[in-house]
Amino acid sequence: MGFIGMISFSIDPSQRPDLGFFTLLLKEQSQTLSLLIITLGLALTISTVDTLVNAISSLFVVDGKATFDLNKKTDYLKLSKYFIILLSLISFFIASKGFDILYLFLLADLFCCAFVYTVFYSFYNKDVNERTAYIAIVIGLVAGFLLFPFPDFSKSLLVGVLVSKELFSPFILQSLLFLSFIVATFLPAIILKIKKN
Image (cartoon, rainbow, N blue to C red; front, side, top):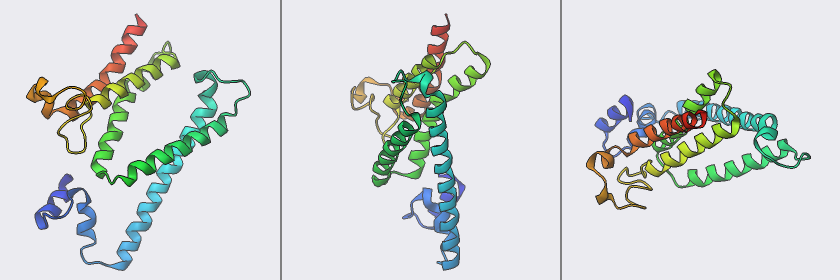
């Protein structure tokens, strides 16, 4: 929610706190300021998407042969384009659900937690092969997703859906987000340590 969200909430409790910055900024309804904010927001979004698309394409083209055991005649650039289209469809579906921006940022943080140890560890230890790194990251993501809370933060896929909430301690019920980050960060580290030995 942040400081601006708290200010916005104190002025008008009916406003969504995660949109407080825009509520305060556009309070006077200045058309020029609104157009400027929309233009800058679009530029930032387009720049981010462009960087993401280029990164995914380069990963497929450069590391595709080492990662995927596909036919030697496989066009990895075309494969990356299909993958980007699939990601775009998934993103469009998620965006159409109207999730909070904060929740989506927390979801992105979960991805970062699953990747961070493996990526930095592979910088300093060249013995880590790509398959082991991918397996560690995917296992960390899956385990983190099992504990990652639903948008109302009352339950997760594991706690409350697959297993009854009554079987878990109050600490676990109140710390689902924290625990999902911890599991997603340290499970890949444990897997890499086991594979090394």
